[in-house]
Image (cartoon, rainbow, N blue to C red; front, side, top):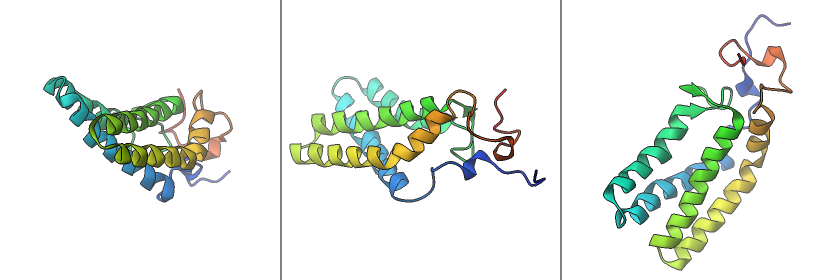
Length: 145
């Protein structure tokens, strides 16, 4: 066994590329369209939506999927947060923008989901204690308790 620590990030398919670019574009739509859609209901809800859509994924992440983890969360939590962002983007776009924009955001989200599938499979595989990863792939930072 090697003495150099390896991390689970080496196994994660969460790398810069098409999937992360599409995911970020969908997140941007959610961050803009959701507060816009909620502004007519309540300015407080509008602000809260931005805080939640940006704050939750920034705070909760799966060890090995991102380099900096504030609060470790199982893989299914990360997947759920991404799905929440995508649903918020699509629903909000249809509510506040012309139909052509709703269609464009729906296609963006659909393509993003397809490109995210390898990452989601990896995240769901490690959802309950990192099965399938060897000790050599985990450091003490990401080893489950």
